[in-house]
Length: 324
Ligand SMILES: NC(=O)c1ccc[n+]([C@@H]2O[C@H](COP(=O)([O-])OP(=O)(O)OC[C@H]3O[C@@H](n4cnc5c(N)ncnc54)[C@H](O)[C@@H]3O)[C@@H](O)[C@H]2O)c1
Image (cartoon, rainbow, N blue to C red):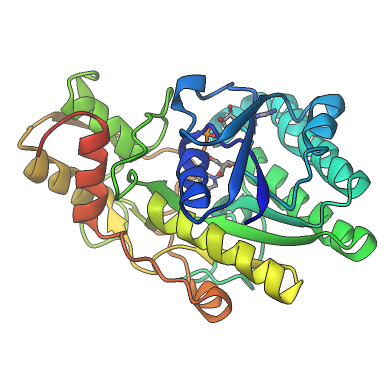
């Protein structure tokens, strides 16, 4: 059993990871400022420290708890907003990361799993995208994550902090065991928006572009179930303990789903025929994004198990209170 500080552990992915840590017998200490999450959604059995990574005293204090490893999920993640208010993202994500890594160095905490993103790659130059693909983010959010990865590489060299940078593609779904059902408060992504249309919280779903060069004309993305993401964190933790070696790996399925396929599947499974409005393409949306996740398999033995469309949709409908 290890003591794991889960920074951002009250959020959507963090709650799922926290649940898996507890299930595996670890002590999970959630550190969060609840900016996009709620205290009542923190997984039962976890300790909670209310704090902000932007404040060195907060994160320094949390690190005094005999921490064995950190899972670092706290960030602002709205790519569009990051292009309008970059300063907010610079401070929260990059300054916050520096405060966290310095607190680790000062308290001799040597292992960290970092929530990185496919957004570090930018426009795909080939598919599926592997970890050797050029990293040229096209939004400031992706830039902050790439900067944090770079800082981690230096802290590995200079402070012996070992990291796993996990580049998630599109996180979706809810706990396959049904324990975690806390909803995202201000979702921006396709599936939560579609779910809100199913339960009548939104009048319609806006589909941005149906004239892309893809089989049905709509964008294709690599959707990864959050229970699959969670298992990768547990495996990454074991890897860092066993090999004491840093790595960066994609987490995706290697197969894609189009916006239209998702909408059709949700309509079919939920039985709700919500309105879909076709709008023009959004700038910066590539037709297709797919991950090559061979490295995660080679290093961790990890492979997506729950990322099929049926499991994704059914676990989400359950969390949104819609019986399918
Ligand atoms: N959801 C996705 O599809 C996706 C894809 C790629 C990467 N990621 C990354 O995964 C991580 C988790 O994402 P999520 O979808 O669970 O988001 P989320 O917003 O639900 O969770 C983030 C958590 O961090 C907390 N937080 C933010 N700033 C903080 C600060 N300064 N101090 C303390 N706590 C702070 C928030 O209150 C929240 O609980 C993020 O780093 C995100 O960039 C997410």
